[in-house]
Amino acid sequence: MKLYTSHTSPFGRKVRVVLLEKKIEFQWIEEQPNTPGSLIASLNPLGKVPALLLDDGKPLYDSSVIVDYLDQVSPVARLIPAEHRQAIGVKRWEALADGIVDAAVLAFLERRRPAAKQSEEWITRQLEKVDRGLFMLSADLSDRKWCFGGHFSLADIAVGCCLGYLNLRMPALGWADRHPNLAVLFEQLNQRPSFQETQPPVG
Image: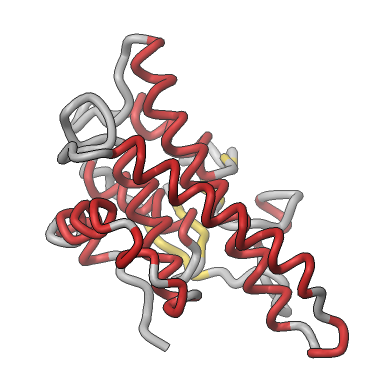
């Protein structure tokens, strides 16, 4: 299977971490959406990364669908519980972490527009979502080691990729100072080879 994504996509990173944790062989193809010659629109009509091209030629998207598929296709290191209520608990964490990233991406892209065209109201609205989301992640984590169920799961992967993206694109946000329990979790995740191998490039 082939994974089409960029170095900096937190959603692509989530998929890469899952592939590494589950020891699934894959070919990683660097794709930057909205650049000349990009193939991503032919794999995902929404033109977003990541997209996973299966061996039968069928593409999968988005990241949440891809990681569900990967967890089912290999029994190694199950990341989503088999029991439905437990699975929903893990997916809830993923949904919140991914939603924080969505808002952060929108704010980041707005900041890249010409200054005269930027909407401070829009940026503020997105950053408020980020702040509320981080507060909920921190409150739900409390003093536990892992996000859900007492062990490493997709919930931790999603949160770790979310926090990594905030560090990359919004270092001035200072989330670690305001939520030290998330900082402890993030440090713990960064000890795992899967997180070390998928670190986004600095700068």
